[in-house]
Image (cartoon, rainbow, N blue to C red; front, top):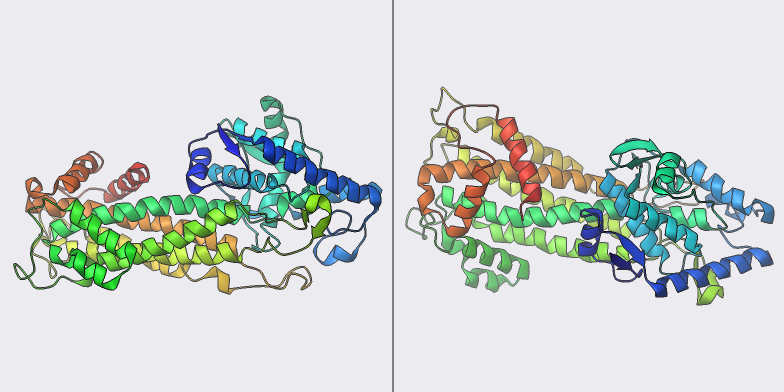
Length: 493
């Protein structure tokens, strides 16, 4: 059981709740903060003081005052009108992540919601009720309005959810789980949909995959070095300390550790003086991607604990301020950076694949084929990798540089952060497929060299991976092999 405070949620915590289905509860201190914030909202409503989103319209309608008797209807109308997402739904994990992040920000006490709202979201998480949320439709400023509105619909017992493996009506899931549909009070609708939880949930899940993949890329590239009899001198610590990037130094050290007792790698001048960049520059390229990922992690963990709705209540409601914390620019930039970083991991991996299969670039059988000519071997695997890295180049175009005004130009600059997060997620998935192809080709190459000469670390990986993808002894439907390796890498630690 994870205790949520609104202050210290980490990506590791996110992983435990979202990927491993750990249950949650709110800390006592956080519950007290929520109660104080709600008391302030009730006082504002009772006194008739005009505060954006509590007793006014939204966006361009912020100057329209709402009568006291219509305050509850205002919140319900907000959810209905904003629940207009389109496209395929987010995965259950993204939906679960959005629930976790939304309740965590409410526990900071700045949102002014009742504890009943917090309890409903926690109830959804612990019962594994996951709202069906369309992926498309967020501008990433004013928050993820459309995606979060679909989340809020489910809390009200409307829309669809996934519960116990089935897509069913939210009201049916609530009944089966023993929960009661929520009725929104003043400000609560706005507090539910103003925020960056869609882009942050997608981004956090993509980051966790990207971090695992980047580490796997180090190991698999080490096996490629064995398959191509690469020069180990390029990974000497002195080279990398001379430049000074810590992540580059770390990658070089990892490669040396992976290949510590290999009899397949060579020294400079033994076979050739220098390797191609895709081999020699693994630390520089992978290291730069790790450096980018460190930045992404920092931005995500700040945002996971951020108050991102509007307005916010401070000093027990004595100060109510409208601002722009819902603007997704910090995450939008981070997602674009992660897209570029993982696209480059795939780019250099595809170049190593080419060196493994191209007979003009190595002394291995052409395309790693048992009978070149009669059988094509890994020829088309490289085509697939090239297609994926080309697709990534298109997806890596930064979403954050785009902005289209909305709400009659009241909201005249937006982040497109959710689009950026979705693209980053797809790039990570594509990159993993490319690295999976490199693994298949590298395993075949080291077989020709002699697996008994492999390093202990790479041989351990090879032995496990061979249970997933058997040796290429003749042409077969390699699509199944590539998909099997991809799926296995998702679980390999």
